[in-house]
Length: 386
Image 1 (cartoon, rainbow, N blue to C red):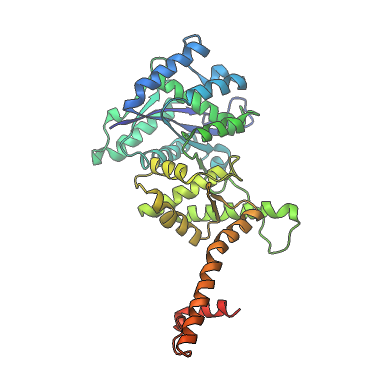
Image 2 (cartoon, one colour):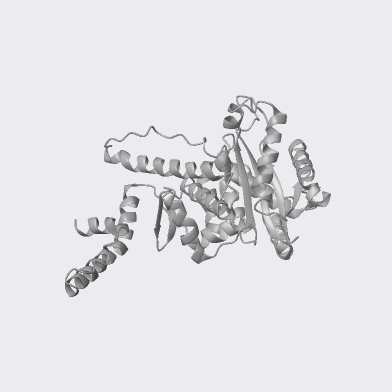
């Protein structure tokens, strides 16, 4: 066991969203650290604690609305070597779907939190803040032990509670999760929330954030096959693109073929970036491959990614744009035109060569040999004869 997730949470289970103190979202996650990196990360924490917290505990709540201070601390924290895993639950949508009781809510979270973390990191150890929500954390610990004790994969020491005052790496998790909350959580949402997320994404440490409900948290405009004003076309294209990606996820999330799961994870990553301010930015292939490999049991190579992941996603009608900078979901009309232009760059010369070869052979053999004469090439004949 060489990875530890220092785990924390933000939010509560309150159901009355008009009542002060009840959160709109429940956020779980933490920093995933290799054993070999713990010492250097602890040293970084000590440095930041001395500089910004007078040597005391690093806590997101102590920074509060001071966004400039938060940005400075965040930038320095991201100098460490770790990954950030997080899950965001929209309580308003979840409770609207029937989870009206705290017990049902935590049971639901137990299942999804396990699936979101342990399926990606099957051998990970969790260290959680004992001052967090004991109802959830202890329930999660019990869920893990109950469901996997028979497989001898986990022991009681695989999930332990420690006081964040005495565990410096839980403090880093607290600050990171608290910062993510400034983007999602309605009660503490910051004007700098997008900037916080941008910095986390740019660092390469933030694994694509999982949100629940996964599909129904986006509202689509009705699809109508009519011409729209130019000002509306881009948004319509983007909504169709998101819808198709969500459809692939929902249809394949329970397909346990390892390659399909990598395709689902890639689709989720593309949706995450498209809906967190990166709609018009391509994500580097190397970045995507690294993050997908970090969050899945099956590992893929850079060469496999295009052929075994992006290709099948496109075949399934997930609208993906690509260029030298990487990949992203198609988000506007110009993306569609760029997509067609990219493939036209390859297809047009190929068709020209086929046509030239065909004409040469037909001429040399007095029309006796037609290299696309087989029935399977009828479509090529129609294209070349247009």
